[in-house]
Image (tube, rainbow, N blue to C red; front, side, top):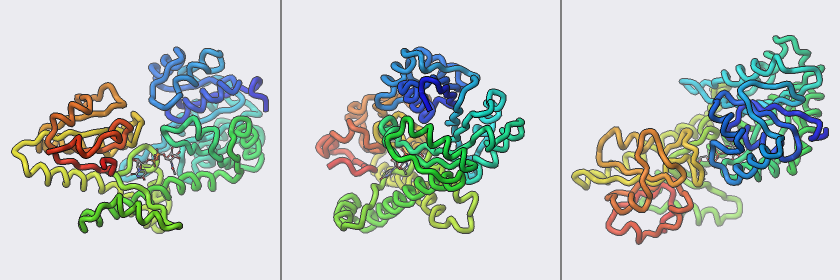
Length: 402
Ligand code: SAJ
């Protein structure tokens, strides 16, 4: 497969679609990116970006300037179609596949014999076959014979996307053997990691299992943090010591688990096998309960004041990103505001504004607050020392202030 003679259409220009599209553009493929937002399309066509991710601005600029990356609101004919659309859940934690459905319907009229369609969105078991391949068949395509369909789940870590897009091993699960082989051939043109072949359903569950594994392990750390608090033991010291055992590697407790992946994907396993996914479900519940525990801690401290100033440091779902999706920090700050137990000040160094909160420089928040709630381990916060919080109550949910 020659990049210079291969045209790629990427549907969805978010945290996965845009890095993928621009990377492929710089590797010599002719790439057309599609998004439903006119603002996103215009921004990219100017060689600019609408999300924060290290080095993505340079990559997009270079791909656009070379003429290899263009964006639009509607798909174009191509050799390879990549679907990188959101897969959230509805009420009751039931997967919402409407974006996958509408993206597949959108590309169906542009598909021709010989094309490969790849679903990169994290999806419940069966989606590649029962949604993508089925819709394409319903549109009259000879799926599996001359239109090839695979799942190749994205596995990149926000904050390290560009490195991991190239270096991580990839799993390719086709709806049949030939789909798998053709898709592997494509990923091998730009992935340095190993590209492993499987079937679509195994690839789907593999991705979900990776995130559920992390969720269960974070839940273990969060549960320990509650036990340690009750016993008046420093959980971070405890974990450091326990991790000196050669076969123990406990993760870090925090204010809860956020992001669009780990807080969502395990539910896709639970939804299909509720009778067996007991540990996975409990881990979700343990992690989802952590924000309320943090709120209660703040309330207990607030009781010592008439009306305290409560300074909240960080809104993002994790360190050094601007992403607020499913962020426990946002939940906590909103709750504190609603309960009106004090005056709330907020700092988020990775954002310039927020629709619900006035953002202040973090130094000002620290100076003015009586109680400081540290919610995200952003780089500038890691430089702070216990001395910076003298005569204040510090609730450090990330254990970074020594
Ligand atoms: N967190 C903790 N303690 C930890 C580690 C993480 O509380 O020790 C919290 C973070 O603060 C954050 C949440 O968990 O709120 C998730 O963060 P993360 O860095 O673990 O993962 P994500 O959501 O940014 O990315 C994950 C990755 N999956 C795994 O590491 C198994 C990434 O490789 C996936 O591509 C991504 O989900 C995805 O898109 O599915």
